[in-house]
Amino acid sequence: MKLSIESIKSERSLWEQKGFVLPDYDPAAVREETEKAPQWIHFGAGNIFRGYIARLADELIGAGLMKSGVVAADSFDTETISKIYIPFDDLSLLVGLRAQGEKYLRIIGSIGKAVGASEEGHREFRRMAKLPSLQMISFTITEKGYAAADMNGRVLPSVESDISAGPEAHHSTALGVVSAMLYARFRENAAPIALVSMDNCSRNGDKLRSGVMFIVNGWKDRGLVEEDFVAYVSDSSKVSFPWSMIDKITPRPDPSISKALSDLGVEDMEPVITTRKTFIAPFVNAEMPEYLVIEDSFPNGRPPLEKAGVYMTDRPTVDKAEKMKVMTCLNPLHTALAVFGCLLGKVKIAEEMEDPDLKDLVYKLGYSEGLPVVIDPGIIRPEDFLKEVLTERLPNFCLPDTPQRIATDTSQKVAIRFGETIKAYEQKGQADRLELIPLVLAAWLRYLTGIDDSGNEMELSADPMLESLCGVISPAWFGGKEPVDREKVRGILSNKELFGTDLIKAGLSEKIISFFEDMLKGPGAVRSTLRNALEKVK
Image (spheres, rainbow, N blue to C red):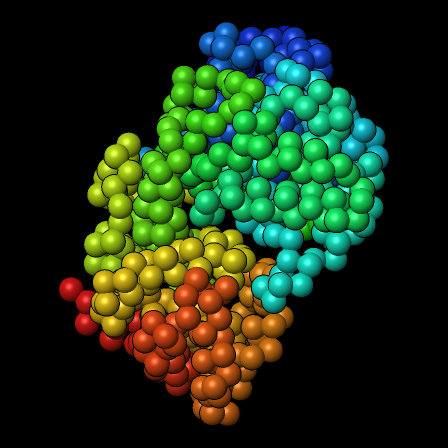
């Protein structure tokens, strides 16, 4: 059984006997329609797109509510197109992992085309951008994909290169590519369009808009585009940047899932690692719970996403839902498990939920420090969401998620996952009541030493600030080989860009430093510091 359009057509009964849900439409016809009249392009052709966003389109096409598919675009790692999309006719295989152990197997045929950012790909992006049928361009490129400058305000070299090259060039960033697409659309017909970030970050639409406007204004300042183009992109009735909240855990492909699929007779399911270190497979393994909330601001119309379970609503409701998830009920718990899991030698998130101390940590972090400042979005009850996270999602042993994966890019996450909650307590004059958030931040600093709680070296996950932070946090502080330089630590804790607030002014720095120093005393100190802190929180 080969994952291909021909196989799912000629061997349909065999696939179904094996338990696969197949498209109830002709994917080849969808590809033809996509070529003629693309409606939706998505940048970031990774797991959450293939396992969730493309599945939404799959349902709409199956119900006769969409004719064309989604164009999968990748400006970062074009090897994913050549190794995962093209060999499998752009089909995606979703393996939904229920906590009870059953697998949900579904072949998704809604990806109508896959395009990488080659010279030919850039021409194709511009061609599609000119078509009035195009209603939306969505993104899952991670929060750092929207950055035009680093934490010190210096313009990133890749962004500077895209600005210098002008709108007609071959661009190296997603921001540059989509800005060039907007320029092509403006010059052709100035048709309206929605640019929808679906990334897991606060006010993601504003981050996308800010990045695009940085490129556009850079071109304008150098005389490379017209003032009218800047006005076009700035006009929300022409180019909108809706906010969204997305939630579905899609870990890196697990070899055990690859084997299970091979045992069912599906060929060539082994994961691959690209030269840019993307770990990807023809299948996506994911949890079953999922949420997508989008601000309903689409000036050129949109697919009926609500028919596929998406919450289409207003901006304030999206903001509340996002804050509920990212700042209190899920993401802070994930980061807490990530840093402590790495320090304590855990290899699976679900494994951590069987550790009494770590389970107590996330329960108290959610209920004692998160829920008191959460805002109910109205469409999803926070108490129910948190309960599902703690009792079903995090303990799901069938989900092959790791603390090491979650620890990736932590420097880009702490401001939102913890900073906003700290500010909420600051506004109440109650920041000094916080115990567990300072503990987690101290554990992250402890993690940056690269030494686990047994005193062994551990590999740190990728992070754009890793080099600069590790240049301050010394491994020699472990075990008292050298005294902790408190002033250097305070320099980190006062960084508002990093933490979302000045932790010295918030009155939390000395508590964090105290936890940090306790964790550095020697082997087992992380565990004992964790237990001592938990005893203080009811």
